[in-house]
Length: 307
Image (cartoon, rainbow, N blue to C red; front, side):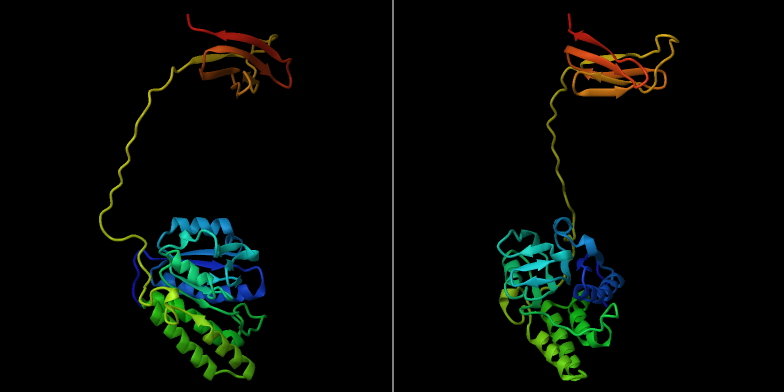
């Protein structure tokens, strides 16, 4: 296995219903494999696989690979509870420089091509429904799902090992064929053949990107520069300091926690000794008010003018 430096994979792992929960369980093995290889991994699991979090993660990781599971159709890829993550006809620029392997129904029919037009370097996915068999009592689908899982996981694991998208597709196809040979009944064989035949990649059409693309580092090596110029404007006049003490008229002791209001927008509270202050008050006329739930409210008008 090749040791990776500064390479990131984003995993979309919704968990809200059986099909995506089993698919996400498959990808947990891939996630562990990536971390062992030295990759940085970002897991958008469960509720975190939502529209806002997904877009922010793509923005913060400009050269990451995207993978994971989710329901889809020819133009739409969704996350937790059908949250729209990517959709044809919308701005797909956040997929620039991000290769994508999608375990999702039908997104390879159109959306996979559209993200490549938007700058995704390579795509592997499925042009029809992805169908698999599973023992739903097992978190990862049990024995019936094993062939489907191995063919799925082969894509990203081979990319992690440094292979191209073309080679990753070929490795997955080999796993499909092996699973078909080991199928235990006609139903299992039928759907293994179906998924294998509907898997698309740069091998099947150049509309899915560069067959020779490999996962790239987050940032190119070398020195970097960052220039930050400032133009500072002089501060306005620092203004007035308005301060004082609020005290008990009978005992003379300071009143703690009195609410002091200066005009309609400035408020503060008195400290343990009844003291308060407002800094940088501009010249003008203000109503200064002192309130406390155990005392009678007092107010006065003050004029702040310079002679």
